[in-house]
Each structure stands twice: as structure tokens, then as C-alpha cells.
Image 1: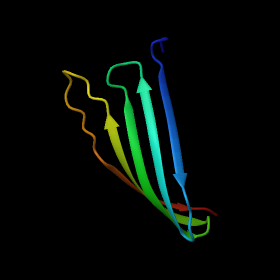
Image 2 (image 1 turned 180 degrees about the vertical axis):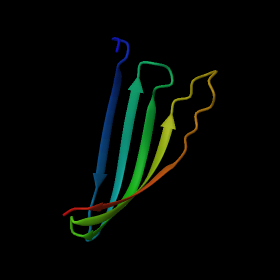
Image 3 (image 1 turned 90 degrees about the vertical axis):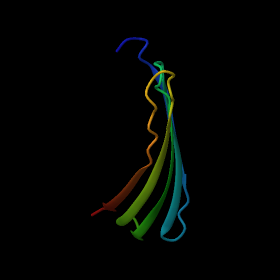
Length: 89
């Protein structure tokens, strides 16, 4: 890693649980020193707490927005969906 290989990044997430449902939103930001390295991803999701903290299902949709570099192939900003089942013993 050279001194020019640096970046600035942050992530913020918030949600509010009401009964067994928790809507969640998040923003992820990454910006490196190289061209085309900036990425902002917006995330929206819902958590369903089936049995308190023991069992839950999480559904999320990520909406990425990558930096387009002039002269480079077009960046594909594909939506990414995730479903997660979580258990604790």
C-alpha cells in the first residue's frame, strides 16, 4: 500500500422497532483517491423479530450509485436484494 492508496468512508444506519417489525434505512459512502472509486449505497429494509431476539428475518434492498469515469465502460448500478434468517441459542 502506497501513501496514495487512501480513502474516506462512512456508514450510518437507523431503524425503529415497533412490536415485531423494524424498518431500517442506511447510507454507505466510500471515496478513494483513484478515478472511479467513489461509491454511495442507499439501503432500505425491514426486520421481522419473530421471537424476540432469538429468531428474526431481515430483508434489505441495496441501491448503489457508483462514480462514472469519462471514457470508461458504463458502470452497472444493479439493485441487490438480501434475505437473512438469524437464530440465536
